[in-house]
Length: 250
Image (cartoon, rainbow, N blue to C red):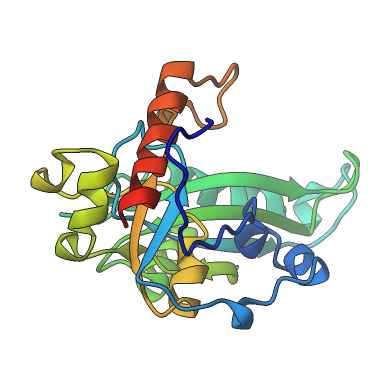
């Protein structure tokens, strides 16, 4: 959007495309040096919020769950111990579990079984199986509580290894009231919202002096990573105008 009102602002824009979180090795190779970031009072994270001002999000914990078995020939499966069967049973218990904690601010903790790998060929009893879990943590249900509950559901004989562990974000509404009102007039009077996804704010807040965080951008969060994901031009225009308004007035 071309501005009709040129302005000068003290602004840093960091394009990350989530390498800090999902691909830390790639971020390091690219030369990202978080120690060089200048502390700030406000961090705007551009993510789809339907142009609502969102004050944080859940944390994330990725776990590798494994089961060990005993290999045997397919003609004598009774001589082995099938790791797929053991871990599949654990996956079923985790998937069927509905009693995950619910935060009054961030909503329910969730657990998704994202991958499952096992076996080498069909004529062998598999002696190893592994699945990766995505846990969305909330206040009161962090890494330790999640691992304990998932270990209970997996049962004896299963192992758990953390692969990624990032905290959630929760900004005090009063600390972000001005930015919220500029971006979306009237939003500061509404209850605070928190996203179900996680963002680079999990990494950046601690390295930017713990600024107030506002997640804001066009697009429906429910459209993320679905087939034919879309965003209207009207929503993008509204967001661009709001960002420019913030830069002029902050």
